[in-house]
Image (cartoon, rainbow, N blue to C red; front, side, top):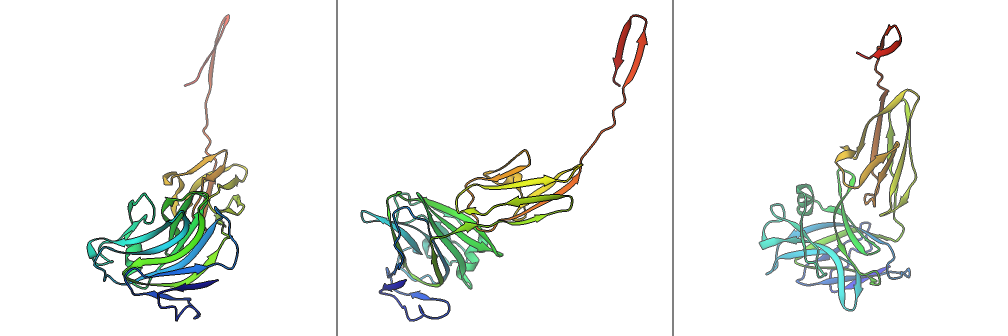
Length: 273
């Protein structure tokens, strides 16, 4: 894989594979050694850091993953109104006809303006997803649509000044859950491809039942797309690389029932107090 463009590429062969873009409207293009077909899954890891807000317009920077008929599809971070990145930063679904703004969490904004934000851009069929790492956990931020017949075209482009480092590319991306099972039960799950349903089978021991289920420390009931039926937990269309799933077990709850029976001549009656 090679990178070309009107940017500073002097650090591309160092340990961190670094690109510094410091020109208004500059661009770098990644040429892939491997052949990819339209619609193939593409995953690009890159750490983004804003060097400064410097442009005459709203500054933004990000990654393009696909192209069709001269239209580019990707996602970028936008600084609105030339404000400081640590104070006001958004994700913009740019290079598409959507041009939607999605607020990003404070931890992502702080990382962009600090030591850098570890990001993952994934083209998965007809969507491009943006994930970022928060305390070691890949967290989904937003998506944009892309035609299924758009061809792979990887570009780093922005208006302003930023650094791209830790650049890695792959078309083989899977989800491998990290399972923690409490005593008196077993929890199993098989790795799946990115964007597929992740199915977790939970088997309490005899006389035990599920006590709690959390995913990345959050109770599962509050997470969209997660459901359970007959002790099978399903994470539908899951878009996190290594979800931490924790299950605890508690004794089954039983209740003592007292049945009182009174008999009279010719009639049987039963009363349950």
